[in-house]
Image 1: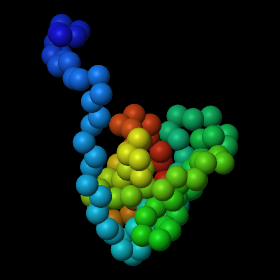
Image 2: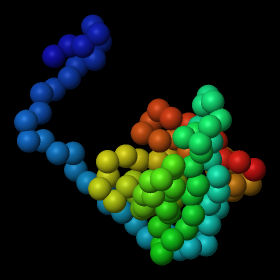
Image 3: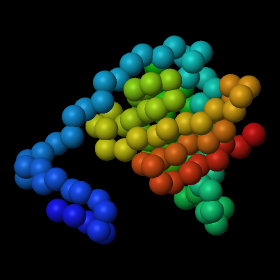
Image 4: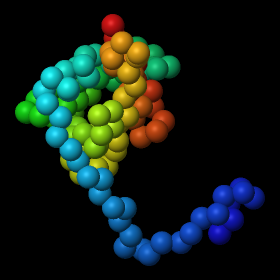
Length: 113
């Protein structure tokens, strides 16, 4: 199908599931720079715009409101939930500090300094 007069979309089977990304192991030292408080860019500043990320047993744990989710690495900057229902891509500054997280290629979360 041609969508928007420019994008070619191919039909997939009704039971299609995307391939799972291969996860890797990072040390707690490699994970430590991701820890911190993140705020949704463009949010109104209330509680649902805040997320806390901590290191827990070789993965990242993200707490948003009352939900706690594990993030496992697929590269040194990309993480997925254990069921791979969403991904998070982090950005680092030239000094190696983590500056932001991009969730599902749309929501930008800025790390507090």
